[in-house]
Image 1 (tube, rainbow, N blue to C red):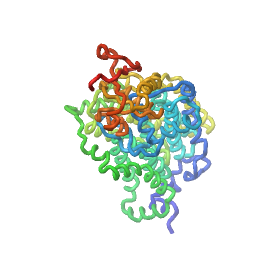
Image 2 (image 1 turned 120 degrees about the vertical axis):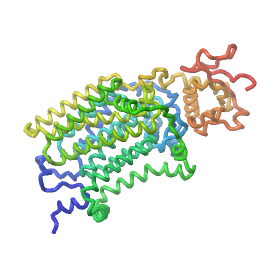
Image 3 (image 1 turned 180 degrees about the vertical axis):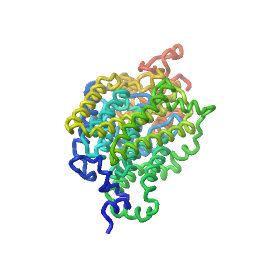
Image 4 (image 1 turned 45 degrees about the vertical axis):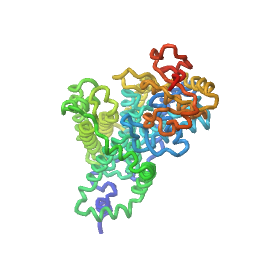
Length: 554
């Protein structure tokens, strides 16, 4: 009869054998398959969420009214509140990203905290709190993955310290609702969970699925990254069992329902709106993706490498290369010091998957990014996860490689590191949410809020006197106020639309004027300050544009 460990190896269960691989297991012999204790999830969630809510207490008293990109997102979020949204946020390339998962989360924040509980004074405030909660959840999932490897509290504290140190360096990762920042934590969680599964911890497959599907919903780029890393995980699991792969796969599906059923349920839930939109509007957004051709020009390998190294050390490619090499050396040496066992396998797998994600990022930069300069850095913000994960590997391996320390002493050191990192995150300036989502390299765009929007809309509605508000004359760079006015109009129950169908990619067909609205509506213009035609009456001054009656004869 086969020993249970031998059968586990054949069946892809991810259980450890009764040999030297238990060397790094906790002293109490805790079973790595049992459920993780409650504090592993709640402590990091509470730390991140608590800091964000305290630093952003103004959300509970100051109404914020969104315009520009956030206004365009809110147009979709209002559809999500009616459960009719099937696509993601708009792209400047005039398509929508695959799925609405992030927008539904924000819609729930608006519905719960603003519409139902009335604990915040404006809809966007509630959306921000939902983003905080989602980012805190992904942080908790990463800590739970680290804890599950060895059932070591100090390992969990080390993971938490790494995440909070990363948060202190780039606070907008947790505090911003601009999509380039929102994607960072799901990608970090996806890489960590996928590496854990590849190391044999199949219990983390549902975390990898959850993060991976959020990414696919959030940006078309992850239709490339998620399958590449998932394929790497499958190869890592299947290669040692390649001679018995068919039998092992059958046994896996027969015996490991706790692993694959949650993955299947999550996948079905997140894929549904994408599939529904594709079927209802064939070929949906995928036709636009396939026809998209990036305007790359003369990108050279040096440009691609410099662009990638920016995320290891901004502004200095040579320093970035040194930091990258040092990160791999330190993480590798600390991993090498670990005794053979689950902790070492986990760290080796993390290093390998960071390397795989880096190679994929280089390919992505060559094939799909057409702005390899400071104006295009925001496209690759999610790759900041690579140095963050290398820091996590170093701290995790360090915590697990010091068995000579008494357990309470080691735990105290790890918890102290986490508390110090949390304090640094709490005092970092950008932990307070900025209403300016713009990349620091491009300061031309102002904040994405305008407190004058409700009053401006009320003035326009009074002039319209029950007729639709028609934005007939619109200067192109006045579009940020356009989205803000439209979303305020929807919330106020006022009919408003844009005459030019060009803007459909941003405001959806819902806000493109019908012939009847054009014929019977009250027509207005939007001009940039200083560019209003001489002699034109001013209806209202918004923060970044001026509302006028539409010129006669238009």
